[in-house]
Amino acid sequence: MAPFSSFLKAFIAVSAVGVVVRQTGTFVPKAGYFPMTGDDTIAGGIFCISLLDLGTYLGRAGNPAGPTSEAPRGAGQATSGSGAYPATSFLNPDLPKHTIFAPKTPPPNTVSLPLITWGNGGCATDPTSFKNFLTEVASHGYIIAAVGRASGISQAQTTVENHRAGLDWGASGKAAKYGNVNAGAITAMGQSCGGLEAMSTAYHDERVKRIVMLNIAIFQDEKRYLLQEIKAPVGYFIGGKTDMGYPNAEKDYKLLTAGLPVYKANLDTGHAGTYSATNGGKFGKAVVNYLQWQWRGNATAKAILLDPQSPGSLVPDKWTVEYKNWV
Image (tube, rainbow, N blue to C red; front, top):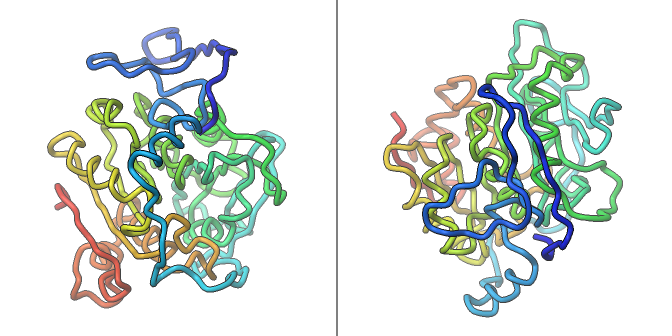
């Protein structure tokens, strides 16, 4: 969510049908206008909002921040995750502006590892504040290409170009050193601005098969018509009514294309979720089970997400759940 830039970058992408020009300049929404890709000069891409516009939006709509019942109290313990494959973070020279979260030791080749591209809150260039959460997800057998190098300092904001670089890297086979990566099982995921960046990356990119939006949805009503171009199922995990992502997730949930599978869960944490808690806290549990259901067809995980009577259901954890078009 960066201010407008006067510098217009030109991006060229090679597609299955030839060379196409990516979106250049700042995207200006107009009914019926669908840019080729989700690139933009502002952080987060075409679905995002500039800092100036965000301030105007919050001044008009109000900032819903307030007391919450489920926000973590203090920092959690750093672990290797609770999954079958203890995980950690890596720096990879093939992807120098990212941090890789993956199992410490490559799992057996019989284990297929879905790929996740990750965008940080604020479109920050450092995923450190999400380390507990991302390590937890990776420990269940996932390779995560997180935008930015873990250093404790964010020096700028990221763009769709950065997010897509992780997707390109994983899809090209360069992640093979971490295990048997399934390049046909790609999730674009992120928190806040990073979530809008994930959706902008997924826009018109058929390689992305799932989109996970954490604490975020589209801010501007005039951009919601773009949702008709989203073809991958979407999962929203929101921090309840004190989360600035809440009112917009409610709108977007209703406006996504008829028949598209969508999942929406709310927990009263506010905008910051529970990512810093041990193993990512309740957001870690919810997102892991969503991914295990989606990518591994895990019946127990599916029941946790959909059946309030199942053992471990999200409902006793105080999530409010709504979904449509799942079978």
